[in-house]
Image (tube, rainbow, N blue to C red; front, side, top):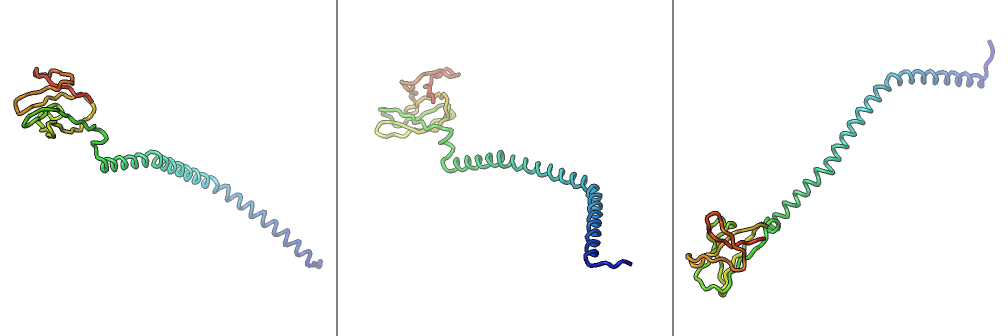
Length: 168
C-alpha cells in the first residue's frame, strides 16, 4: 500500500466534498424542479390576492373615504349653520305706511294659511325663508280688506282671485 501524506488526504477530502456538493445540487435541483410549480402557483395565487387587496384598498381610499368624509362634513355644516342658510333665501315682506290693527299675508308659501306680520312704526313686516321660485300671495288688512302689492306683478289663480307675485 502506498503511503499517503496529509496533502493527499486533503485532496481526497476536497474531491469527495466537491462530489458531495454536486450530488446535493443534483438532489436539490430534482427536488426544486418538483416543488417549483407548486411554489409558482402559490406565488401567483398570493400575488392575485395581493392585487385584489390593493384594488379594494384603492376603492376604499379613493371612493368610499372621500364620500364618507364629505357626507360627514355636510351633516356637520347643516348642524352648525342650519338647512335654511343653504337651500332657502331670507325674504322679508314689508308693507309700509299702513294704518291698521292687524296685517296678515296668505300665499302658496304659507299653504294659504294666514300669517301675522309685525308692526314697527306703521310698517308691517315678516321674514320668510324660501327656495328660489315664483310665489303668489296677498295681504289681508284688518281681517276684511285684501291688498295687492302695487310694485309686484299680479296673477290670477285657478279660482279667479288676483295675487301678487314674488319671484326669487
